[in-house]
Amino acid sequence: GGIRPRILVVQCTQDRTGDYNAFMNCTFACMKAGICIDGLFLPDGQKKKARTSGGADPSSSGARRPDQSSVFLEQAADRTGGIYLAPTCAAQACGGLLTVLVTAFLSPEEVRAITNNPVQDKVDFRARCFTTGDSVDVAYVCNVCLSIFKDVPRDEDGEEGECPTCGAVMERVKRLKKAKANGIKGEVEESLV
Image (tube, rainbow, N blue to C red; front, top):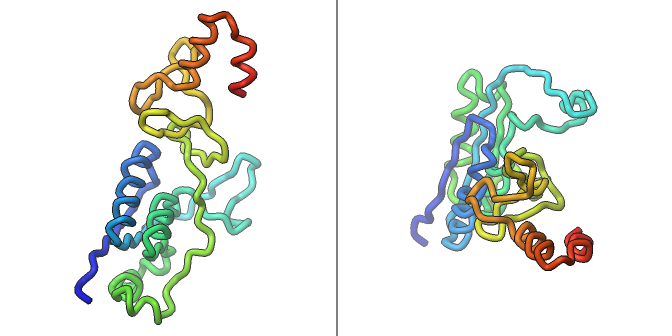
């Protein structure tokens, strides 16, 4: 065979939830075209103590801080058969990063199959809320742009309203307003829960 296209994405900042749709659309296009996406996340290297909601240090449980990895890149690399790495600050110092780049990302797919490359054993495929960035198991989805929300988007008056991403009126809100106009509010609210 000839040369197969590959993409190496280097990211140094946290994932931005507003970019999720565009990024995943690119990932799906690469899957269809047979293009491998490799992801390299370079954390800032500073030792920060991140606290979880319970006050515990996530590093003690083996969990990686959100600013030390990219869920989007992990998903893209996994879906397209690429490699995802988030080297620690030790690998970035003293020229170690160049070694990581050359050994992990430079080899063609045929060579990767026989070498000892990093394997992603735990990829978080849960969707992320577009407003909070939290992982969600159950969510509200915009019927137009497919944006995902932990809670129903509300307008400035606190009323259920439009999608913050595209401005479309959420389908649940349309059904609820229609039901209220027809006088069958209680039945519809129960069926929407």
